[in-house]
Length: 257
Length: 305
Ligand SMILES: Cc1cc2nc3c(=O)[nH]c(=O)nc-3n(C[C@H](O)[C@H](O)[C@H](O)COP(=O)(O)OP(=O)(O)OC[C@H]3O[C@@H](n4cnc5c(N)ncnc54)[C@H](O)[C@@H]3O)c2cc1C
Ligand SMILES: Cc1cc2nc3c(=O)[nH]c(=O)nc-3n(C[C@H](O)[C@H](O)[C@H](O)COP(=O)(O)O)c2cc1C
Ligand code: FES
Image (cartoon, rainbow over all chains, first blue to last red; front, side, top):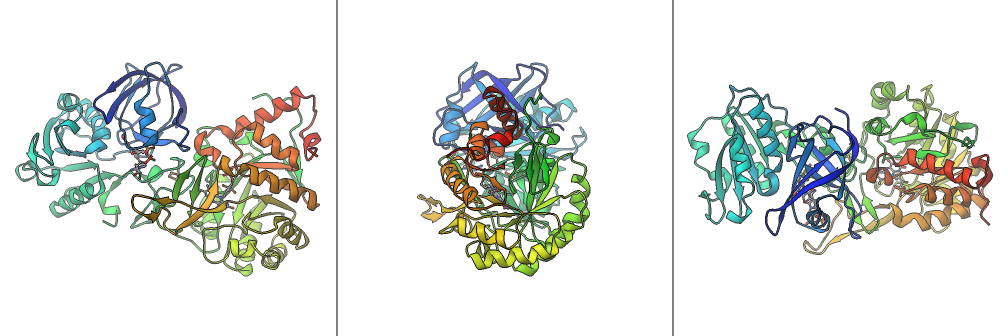
C-alpha cells in the first residue's frame, strides 16, 4: 500500500459540539490511495505557532466514490484546536495511509464486537463500513462520559447494532463499556477496541478470559509516523516496537498487559 | 527533476552526486521513505545508529515537542551489527546512493569491532561515528566531550576501518573546534556536526519531566543558529571536510551551511514534517546556483567571510 503526501482540500466541516469536529476532505488532483480500517494519517497543523510536529489522526471513514476521507477530531490541545478551526475549501496536508490497521478477517459468518471509548470510536466507523460491504453486521459498543459526548450515532447505526454506556447514565446503560449487559448476553468471535488505555486494558482482559481474539488500537505519541524515528514504541513481548509502523493496531496477545 | 549546475562534492574521496544527505535516526534505513522520494536523487543516506550488540533503547516516552523543535531520548535502539549485516544490508545495498552507517558503542573496542564488521560490506562506502549521543549512559557522548576520549575512539576505529571515516561531533562541549582538531589528528577523514543539544521538558500538570530518562536531545529549526556558528568555526579550524547539520528545513538553510564552510549537509528532523524535503533541498540548491550564475556547488563552499 503506497504512502503519499497529499494536499487534501477540506470539503465540509461539521462541528459536532464544542469539542468535536468532523472534517471531510478530498484529493483535488486524483483518486485517494487505497486505505484500510485502523490506519491513520499524519496531519500537518498549519496555522499554529505553538505546534511543530504533525498530528496522528485515524481514518474515520473513506468514500472512494466521492473521493473523500473523513476525520473525527477531539479538541484536546493546540494542534487539534487548529484542526477544529478548519474551513471548507482550506488545505489539509496529510501523509496517508499509515500503519497496518485491523487484521481480523471480515467474514459475514463471524460476530464482531467493535468497542470504542471517547474519540476512540473514530476508526471503528471505517471498520464497520468495510464489514458492511462484506455482508457482516457488527455490534458497536460505544462508551462516553455523557450523552453530549456520543457522536454520529446514526452513521454507526447504518452499518451495525449500537449499544451505549455513559458514565453518568444520561444515555444507554450507566457505567463503563466493560460493564454493559450485551457482553453477558451475546457471544462474539472477534473484538476490536479503541479508546482510553484503561478501557482497552479491561476489554483485553475480558477477551482473554473468554478466549476471544482481540485487537486494540494504541495512541502513543508520534513524531514521524513512518517507522523512522523510533519515538512511538510500545514495550511488547517482541521488545520495543513502533506503534506507527507495526501498529497502531495490535493483537492483545502481543502486548505486555 | 532536472539539475542544471554541477552539484557533485567530494568528502575525502567519497563522491556525492550532490551535497544533500539524510541524518541518522531520522530517515530509518531509507526504505521508510521510498514511497515519497526517489532515493537515488540524494547525495547519501545515513542510516540508524548501529551498535555491536542489540539495544532496546530507552523506555517510552521518548519524545517531547518544543518550540520549533523536538526532544528525543530514543537511546540507540537497534538490533545490533550482526542483524544489520544479515537482514538489513541485503535490503539496502542496491539503493543507488551512498549508504552510510552511523556507528555507536560503549568502548573504543566496541566501536572498532562494529566498524570492522561494516568494513566488510561492499556497498557501504563510509561510516559516521557517533561519539555524541546524549541519550545513553555509557559511551556516546562520554567520548565526544573530551579530546582524549574522542581521539581514543577514532584511533581504534581508524585501525579497523579502511574506507571513509566521518566523525559526528557533539555540541554539548566547551570548545567543539578542539574536539574537531583532536579527531582529525586521530585519523578522521571528515567531521559532521552537530548532534542534538541536551535539553529537558516538564509537564506542569503532572509536575514531572516528560521524557522517560529526564533529558533528551534537542533538534529542529530551533538549533540551527547554534549549529551554523559551530560549522563556521570548525570549518575554519580543520583541514578535513565538514558536513553540516542541525535544523536544516529548506534549501535556504542548506545554502547557509554551505556558505559557512560545509562541503555537504544532512537533513534530520525536517524529514518528519515533510518526507519529500530532502529532494526539494537538492532542487533548491540547484536553483540558487543557477540564479547566481555559479557553475558548481563547490564555488560557494565556505565563501562567507
Ligand atoms: C494512531 C493514532 C490515531 C489517533 N486518532 C485520533 C482521532 O481519530 N481523533 C482524535 O481526536 N485524536 C486521535 N488521536 C490522538 C491525537 O493524535 C492527539 O489528541 C493529538 O495529537 C493531540 O494534539 P494537540 O496538539 O491537540 O495536543 P497537545 O497540545 O500536543 O497535547 C494536549 C494533551 O493531549 C495529549 N496528547 C498529545 N498527543 C497525544 C496522543 N498522540 N495521544 C494521546 N494523547 C495525546 C497530551 O499529553 C496533552 O495532555 C490519535 C492518536 C494516534 C497515535
Ligand atoms: C529521533 C532522532 C533520532 C536520532 N538518532 C540518531 C542516531 O542514532 N545517531 C546519530 O548520530 N544521531 C541521531 N540523531 C541526531 C540527528 O542525526 C541530528 O544530528 C540532529 O537531529 C540535528 O539535526 P536536525 O535538527 O536536522 O534534526 C537523532 C535525532 C532524532 C531527532
Ligand atoms: S513515530 Fe517515528 S517511528 Fe513511530
